[in-house]
Every structure is written in structure tokens, then in C-alpha cells.
Length: 205
Image (tube, rainbow, N blue to C red):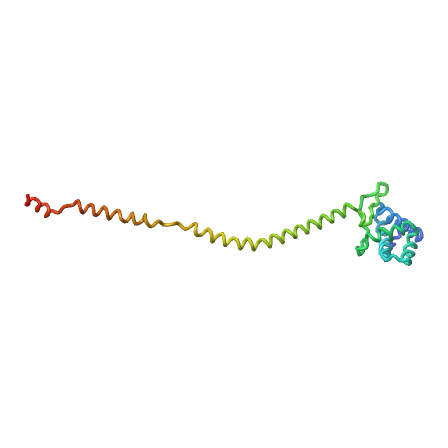
């Protein structure tokens, strides 16, 4: 039973397990990704990430410590020359486990473990997401700046439209309308003759 035992023995003795993890770590550093089982990948992640952190300090002592775990001079030189520069700004989490399915023979869960900074597709996707975020922020700032300008322009437009909407009353036409009935009344009084005037006219004849 594995009660209270944190280390996964992977079905191997201590010496066999250390040799296997050393070879897998060297292969991961040289090829940047390897295919293995999920259990071995998790054990390898714990084994190799402290070595990558150690490579950030490029000193003779650090190289000797890393070589005692890897036992491969080509992997050590690759780790300190290229990988250390790639992960210089990353504070841990140097590897990624991507599950790929199950093995046909025994049904073991398989995966691919790779170095994070050596996957160009995921790096491009991350850059694209950052670019989209900056664009959205820029658009929001523009709308906020333009809003006060639109509000200030609206009252001016209303003031300009108000004088145009008021109807103009032509005063001369109203006077003409009032004068016409008076003219008709004077004509009617001139045409009418009183009976006294008619009598005077007959006596004169």
C-alpha cells in the first residue's frame, strides 16, 4: 500500500527510477517535447523544473549540480545557453502537460510534456489575445472622450433650430383685411339717399 507515500515509485526501484527520470529530462531539454504516460510526466515535471530554475544562475557550481542530475553534457550546455535565456522572465511553470488519449495495449493515459516557451502556436495565440484587449481598451477611451463633445454640440443645434421654427406674421396683410370692410361701408352710405333729400329735389323742380 502507498498510504502516506507522496513519491510515485512508477513500478521501479530507486536507482532505476532516477536513471529513467534523468534520461527523460535530458530528452526533454534537447527535443523540447516528449510523449509519455501521465504518471511519468508528472514525476518528470517535479524532477526537471528545479533544474531549469538552477540554470538561471550561470555559474560553475550550478553547472556541476545540474550535471549530477542530467549526466549529459549536451543537455547541460543546451539548458544553460538557450533554455535559460527563454525562461529568464518566467517565474516557474516551465513545462506543460497535454493529454493525448489512451494507449491501445494496456489503456494507460498518454500525454505530451513540453517546454512552454517552445510552442509557437500557443505563443501567437497569446499575443493575439493581448492585442485584442488593448484595442478594446482604446475604443472605450475614445467613446468616453467623444461623449462630452456630443453633449455640448446638441444644445447649440437646438438653439439654432428654434428661430427657424417660429412662424413669421405679415402685418401689412392683416391691415388690408381690416381696411376692406371700412371701404365697403363708406360706399354703401354714399349710395343710400334719405327721403328728405328726395323731397327737396322734387320742390326745386
